[in-house]
Image (cartoon, rainbow, N blue to C red; front, side, top):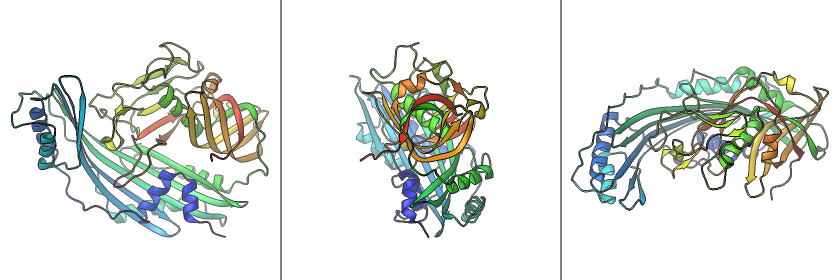
Length: 475
């Protein structure tokens, strides 16, 4: 028996499915022509000239430019594929004397394209005398990577797992997002190179009438050999796909629950996006309690190799750690210094970079008691008006007297009050896992697609109480 390829990919999530299908050439646009990278000094010269001309007209000017290349190599049961795309652009943000902000975007990172953007904003030929400060160091070039090497690496990732005749679908993917970003304003001349890598595998096996799908993924910044996906994680995904689920559905009720890192990540990301991001009425008063004392949450874009890290944000603000929750108390919101633009050129909004939940001291089995372990978090929705969270998980594993019973229930969801869930946390495990965070409102789009703001989190498992039930239709 076989399984429909698109059905399995859809079960992995829209972003994962479209990324893999695009890399394998399934309905994607043809690759854009590749050109040699723009010389860094040329780009900075064009931006200096543009800012100096606009500063004659506007009291505040900022230019953010990006030259981005995305390479995705993938393989599944129908064979391998590689896609390479490129995208350039500059977004100018100006403030008029009356305080009104205006933005202008050009997708032409050339002298002519930048000059046209300046003229569209009303800039003339006169130039203000501006000191841009010290010139930044030019980022180093990454190692060359040809198609043969990429094919070898993704094949190795694809085959590096235990085989079984029950596996009806398998896929592997390597995604490399390489962006050079320039930020230029009066008194500021910054440049950074952000190379973000993601490796993932998917395994599917029949479980009754439907396929059970399990994935393993690791993402980081740096280069391919810095933090590759481990063979043990790939084997664990294969084992999870082959696991036989307990017949019937889980009884609805409130229980003690252990949330694995993927589920914990969804809870904390929802908290950060809805309760800890600058906005009217979103967060409690400074120093007010939002979670249990076991919870200390920091957003740190400076963390080494963090997938969501950066040297400066998309408004040019320098990176620095920010404590959001300190022993459960509200300490700060995501605001200035966390301005992020999807693809570096979309609308600016505050967002997390690399969230870190401070680990506890207990090993994971020490968190077990009577209740459930929720594993493989899939998606979360939250209604701020009612504080209601609905979080889907691939499976729930029953615990009794501190040990798994062997009963495993597929397709469950955690439903109830988010603040009650945070208040009920009484233990945090000691071993964090690094995961990527997706924006549920932004999916892969041509020509480059990708995660909206390249966010990530490092979190261990935790224990709390919540209402768990069989997954219900979202229709």
